Every structure is written in structure tokens, then in C-alpha cells.
Amino acid sequence: MEKIKLELVGITYNQIESGVYAVVLQETGTTRRIPIIIGFPEAQAIECKLQEVITPRPLTHDLMVNMLSSFGIFLQEVNIYKMENGVFGAELILSDGINTHTIDSRSSDAIALAIRVGAPIYTTAAVLAESGFDSSESGKEKSTQATASRGSRQPHAKESAPKSIEDLQKEMQKAAENEDYEEALRIKSLIEKLEAEQEKED
Image (cartoon, rainbow, N blue to C red; front, top):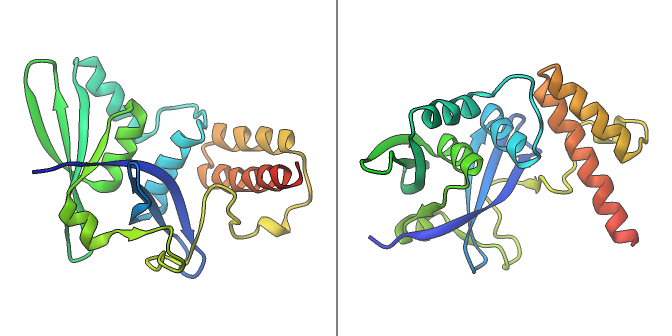
């Protein structure tokens, strides 16, 4: 079975339905993308790693990576190999350097683990054909009426008083240290918005 390599583009937020997110994957070298609907906990796990938010204690997926590593097991790759009734199925390919095992997994968990260890993510032509869209074609991102997390505008963003990026970064770190990860992600979105505005001005 031919495997198609995917790259993580980011997380999108559904501004219509609260608490609904999508992780967006893109076929390497093309504009074909796959959106996978996930909940807040899964989005939080992925975003915390993408933004390198330092937490006082390991999150669940960090703990899993630490446990596997302590036994000399590593994640070789992730395969998003099916989609049934709108639900994606994934497999973790684990190895100890001698033996290889395939473990069933939710796609969101598989992605959260893969980005922590730099493992490649693959899918099949069938899954891409069924669930993918071409991001270069206007209006194709119809699975979620979302705004990309990089430079996104999360709820309540306009309600915050203007602050510098440095101040917001300190607040984000403090929220993470207090394990208020939802607030940390909200502040992170404000930082990205300010950075995007500064880039346009430059």
C-alpha cells in the first residue's frame, strides 16, 4: 500500500461551534490538505508542543513518550489509514530496534505523539481522496468555518487591553505554570495576531 507523507499545518478553531477544533495536515509537496475534527484537550496537547509551552509537569502525551523511551521503545511512524463514518483511524508503529509492533490509536493522539518525537505521519491515497481538499482553491475549507491558529482571532481577543508581545509571553508562561492551558492558548493566539500585524507593517 502506497503511503503519502503528511505535514502538520496547524490547528483551526470553529468560531460557530464552541469547543470544536480541527488539526490540518497537508500532503508533502502539494496543496492537498486533510482536516481532522478534534476536541479542546487534543487541540491543547498539540498546540502546547507546537508553541513549546513549558508545563510544570508532563502532559499525558509527554508522559507516554517518557514511558516508551524509558523502555527503549520509540515511535517509528504514524499511519492515518482509514476514515469510517467521518472518523479517522490511525496506527502507531513502535519499535525497540529489533521488534516492531502496530498499535491502534485515535488520530489526534497519534499526531500529538508524532510531533513530540519527530516521527513522520502518513496516510493513504484513498483517505486523501475521500477527505482531502485543495487549499489553493477558494472556499474549499468547508469542513470547518475556522481561522488558522497562526494569526487567528480567538474569542474574547478584542476584549483584552493592548499589551506588548513580551508582556503577553510572560502571561502565557504564567498561565502554563498554573496549568491553565486554555488561557495559555488564548494568550498565544493574541501574540500570533500581534506578530502578524507587525509583519504586515514591516
